Image (cartoon, rainbow, N blue to C red; front, side):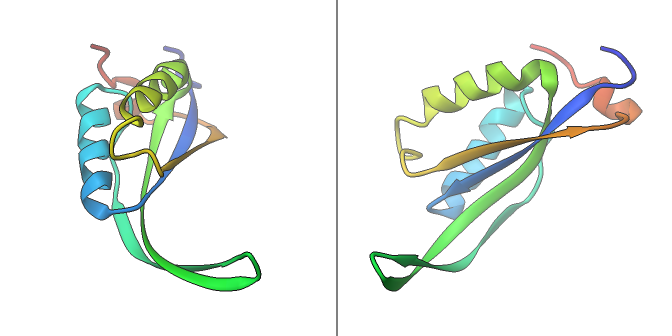
Length: 107
């Protein structure tokens, strides 16, 4: 990998925090993401002209550009179970990689 590696910031929205932690641990074990927090709390949105409130969970992490397609494929594979209501968002974050980021092992 080159020193000027490109990264994607990964946001995953899920329905429950236990699912977020399981997802994070699974993707870390596969060496597809670096890890990060599992955040949960209330949210509100407009649905059919009514304000609806729910509790949601989010994970925020990073992945390397060369792992992007593999991450999406794995996320789709495991998303068929209890993660069916989740939303995955990848946002490109170009920049200099830290030394530890460049050494993320491949399995």
